[in-house]
Image (cartoon, rainbow, N blue to C red; front, top):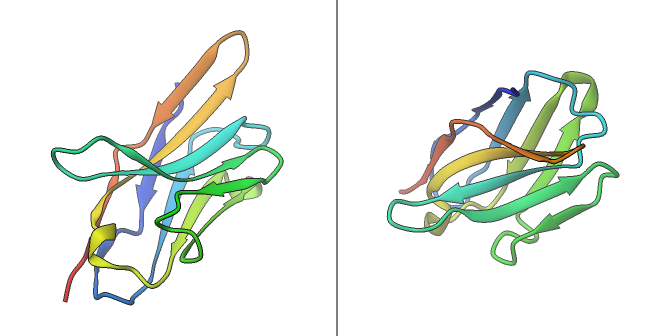
Length: 118
């Protein structure tokens, strides 16, 4: 079992920035993929950004140019730098880890709330 603990959420004004962190209980070196998803009440969880083991990142169109996903293998931590935040970015943000060995394993954190409001 892998524990993922998100932090860094909070209340920010439109145009502001936040940096989310996701600390993993095991090494993230070589993990097939990690990512950030977000969810608002009554809607499906949606992909925000992912990063693969080789460092290739993908983003939802809605966040391209504003959000940056990165990871620090030495600290077993995933990050999401969010700039120019807008009210529509308000959501609970979840960290995700995918490991493929004999089968596919998916792990989720508990989430951190991001609220963008003036």
